[in-house]
Length: 281
Image 1 (spheres, rainbow, N blue to C red):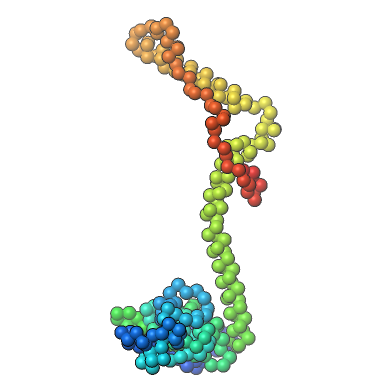
Image 2: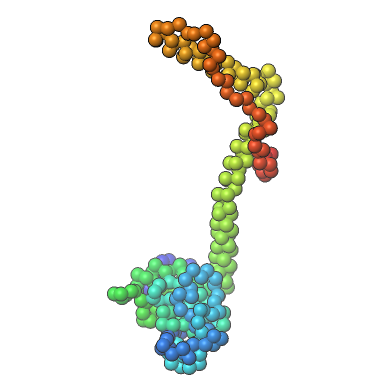
């Protein structure tokens, strides 16, 4: 079966034709002697949860020789593609040393001229397909038969390597882009604060002030605002007396309270620094 059209020099095949499909196993967990601190590397799907590296050498636990013998697991060679077949389906890594797995895997011990990195990338991209051909009631599982008949497009060996190199390069670029984007938020906030500081220190309008030397200075603006404020207060007070039919008493204007003058020595310092955009702050 062909899942899609491939180049003429490629060929659709099945997993069992390019690899031996080997499952794993778990020894009785009630016997602690089945496990050893520095025993045989043993992987479970949990060890691949959130695991992003291509290769894996050991998991959370190791089997003892006794534990290996008490289970259906077997030691797999370096380069074996470890593919989770249940709980969940679709995690994938490559054995970087002799390793065993539990029954949650269908492992591909590849034959000559098949690059494990190529197969790993393909299987990771085929997670949804693997789930679609799995079965089960409590949870889905990809059976050994389904895994053996799993469709795989095989490219020439040299092209397999080039594909892997290309994917790795693009993924590295994607990773760097994500890292750069994660820094954008803090940088935008820093820019916003710096921009506000520059704006309210007059830095952003220095050129405009130079081109408009006769503009009303802020000191005169404040005087005018104070004068207009007092004028509005007096108009409001006179309106109150008129509404009551009374004449304003002598010295009524003295009740007006002037706002406190600004003491520049009490003003906070603006943060200092600089931005690559050329705005000094």
